[in-house]
Image (cartoon, rainbow, N blue to C red; front, side, top):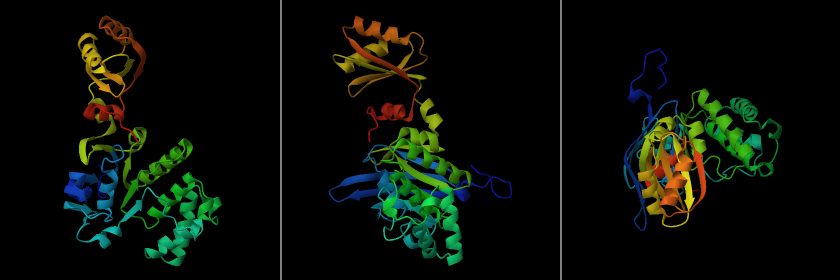
Length: 327
């Protein structure tokens, strides 16, 4: 937690910038997208909501940014009750949605300039800040270009630049790198690291494990509208209780194979069938692959493929739900 300006640690209440209690959204037909969400986000951190599509991440962001009306519960952003005072809450936030919302009738620099003017900046200040952001976001050479001329990565960088143009207290990013190529994704990560280093508080949603691991100070693993686990990426990975993950492909009944390997392979802490494979959590890795093959063959199974990896946030998700974290 960052220190207060006078050098003394501020209280949790002073540093808390997002708080929800029992936040719930039920859509017509009885679909509960978010189920009694209790969440606290601290000033200066990058906080990630990690989960598959349909987990409730976008709906959560929608409620926190007053785009979606909650069915029940409470939510405050920057100390403002989002439900009671949505217009006031919007003044202190920046939002980058999943869809491209850039104004196609304006140039790249004009998208920033007029956003700044809308939020009360003078013409001179808006022009100066737009130029500065175009440099920071590697778009200066495209300042006069039409928005339609931008690549997907450039357009996304411009969306983020526009969202921080008015210096919001909290920046919301909903699946910020979905659909981007690896190079564009890494470029955006670098920019988000810069913003965070300058003190920007960020809440992002993602279904990319590596993104959450690389960017976030804390991560909430979410599915079916509920938070399954919340901690730092490192602590979440340690919670698996294993330092090696073995993925086994084999013929036959995989649920039975999982039970067999958990009982017979030394060092196995847990074993689960995950789709068409069995995943083992193992303490240590020395000699584990031959032991897996031997145990499987003795049980009448034929192993067709084996792989070793370190625990990831997807491992955490699988450990909690027994299924892969898919797009």
